[in-house]
Structure formats: C-alpha cells, structure tokens
Length: 164
Image (cartoon, rainbow, N blue to C red; front, side, top):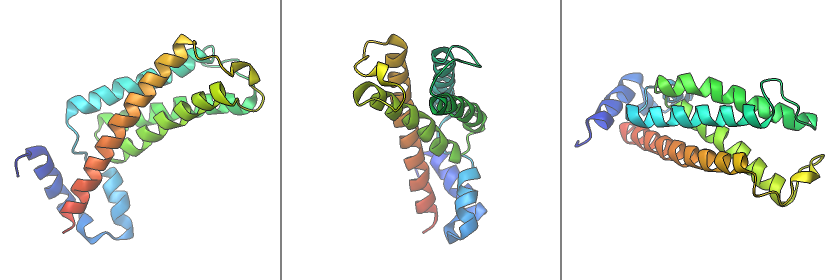
C-alpha cells in the first residue's frame, strides 16, 4: 500500500474488529482513530472555531438577542456542537467528521432559507444577501462541509476495505 497512513488505519480497523460489522462496530468506527492527516484536522479545527465565533458575533455575544426563540436555540446548538466537535477533530476521531458535516450544513441551509423564502418570525432577512458576516459564514461552512464530507468518505472507504 502506497499510503502509510491508510495502511495504519486498515490495521487498526482490523484490530478493532471492524471487519465483522456488528452493531458495536459502528460505534467502534466512530470512535476509531481517523485516517485524515494532522494538517487536515487542523484546518477543520480552524473552520469549526470560525463557525462558532461567527455565530457568537452574529447573535450579539454569548447571551445574544436573537428572536424568535427557535433561532436563538439554533445559534446555541451550532455553537455547542462546534465546541464539542473541536476536541474530537483534534483527537482525530472518525465520528467527528460526521459531526463537522452537520455543524456546517445546518446553518448553511438555515441562512439560505432565511434569505430566500424567509423563516417564520423573521421575514426581515429575505433578500439581504449583502450581509458580510453571513457571506463569510457561508464560505466557512461550505468549506467545512466539503472537507468533512471528503474525510468521512475516506474513512468509510478505509473501513469497508478493512472489512474484506
């Protein structure tokens, strides 16, 4: 095998018994060490940190003043999920890539909806595509989604190959 990182991942997957694909194998897979190189994990760390900070800034600080309530809860969930995912990414756990995908795609879709058709209780943002922080958020979240999806697909592929 030409890639020593993937070769090591395959060996670890075999040690964990992922080849059996039992119910516990999915959990073992999620908690297994990741095949993504450390620099990729560091980029994901920076993107997750940016997602959290952008949402803290957009809501007006940690407490914030976002209305309606469901939007405020959404902001808090994004910030908490980013904070939970960061240490998992730094520890290079495979399941962190799935969480990173969710942390990025959720607010990305919500922003698009809020600017296109509007969200209940927040009609004032429809058509407001010129919001700079929102544009930065879309770029960061889109980049994180692509990165995390590619890394997750790589890990799933390595897991399947180890299960032969």
